[in-house]
Each structure stands twice: as structure tokens, then as C-alpha cells.
Length: 269
Image (cartoon, rainbow, N blue to C red):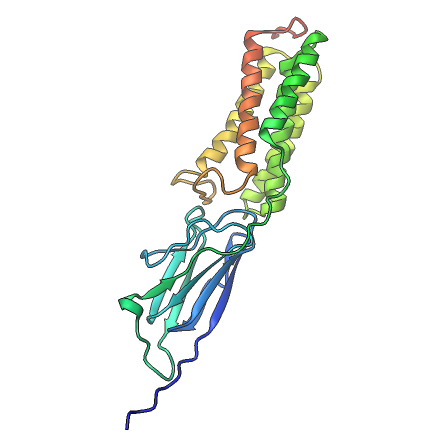
């Protein structure tokens, strides 16, 4: 008589991705179980095995990715855009029966599923630039310094987007505090540009501050990182490319204004 087949009871575990953290970071399961990662952040994340057993690709907000683990072992993984985000799956032998690896595979990876939630409301680049151009033409027709106010508007937009990055995406510290400082600095800079005569030294200082803000974003994309924070790619969240766009617009308006100097501007002391 053939021996009775033992039934393997499998389980399904869910890991939540929120606040730039895998929760839990240490998942303990048995061979044959499935782990589901759900992204609750507004930014894009991935679940990428350190030894290339599986990779999710981009997981948007509200989407999920699942992997069935067929063999015991430890499977470390990380987020490609945010390499400081790490976790691992500890797979114990299945209880009650041996597990047959499908076609010799250690894991059986699924696909990213689920609908993507709409991104937070942000300033649309095209519509804002068209509106800014229209305002600039009106100001120029009134013999006012259009480029100056275009720089003011773009500076305010960068501040609003930096603040939204902090409030909506909840970046880890000290990046979160730095975003708040940059948002407040943008408001102060816009008020400074809008008030009083616009001298060449004021333009130069404003350009330097905008370049510094863009440089800080650029450093986070390098292996050095900013305060240990690394982020790959320029589109993990819609606010990021928009903030860069408006920063470049503000710099361009200030530099062009240096060449086409308005008669209302004051010379340097």
C-alpha cells in the first residue's frame, strides 16, 4: 500500500511598504508560503532580491507584488530607488511534508497587481508655464518687470512643492527637515525678490540659492548621498521633476533679466 500523502498547509503573509520602510523588515515563513508586498507610500518603490532571485520593478501606490518561496533559506531584498530600505525573508522548511521546487526554482515570482491611486494634486508644468507666460506679457505691456515676477512665481512654486514632498511623502530625517527649510527659504527668497529694487547682486544671490537647492537634489542621486539618503531616478514622485522644472525656470528668468535689465532696477552699490 502506498504511503498516505501528507498535506502541506501554506500561508500568505502581507508586508506593507510605508514611510520608506518595509513593515516588517524580517519576515519568517515556511517553504511554500507566499509573501505579498503592498505599497502604501505615494512614491514608487521596488522589491528587489539582493541575489537576483526576484525583482518587482516599479510598484506604485496601492499596488502589490507577490513571491512564493519554494526553498528554505534567507532572501535579502532592497528598494532600488531607495537603497537604504532593506529587509529579508527567512524561509524555514515546510512542516509535514517535503516541498518540490517547481522546475528547480527557488521562488515563484508574481506580477505587480492592483490599481494605482491618483497622485497628489500638484502644479501642472504645462498649464503653469502658459499662465506664467501670459502674466509676463501682461506685466511687460504695463512696463513692469515681467521676468522678475516670473522668477518670484517659480520660486514660490518650488517652495510649495518641497513642502508637499515633506507632508505627503514623509521623507526620513534629516531630509524631511531639510525640505521644510527649503520651502521656508523659497518663501523668504520670493518675498525678497518681490520687494524693493532688484539689483544685480540680488539676482546673483537668488541664482546661487536656487542652484544650491538643485545641487542638493542632485547629490541625493549620487553614491555619496545627502545625510546618508540615496534615491535613484528623477520620477519617484510627481513633485520632484516639477520642483526641478520650476527651479530651472526661476534661474533662467533671473539670468535673462540680467541681460535684459529693466530700467526700474537699481545698480549695485
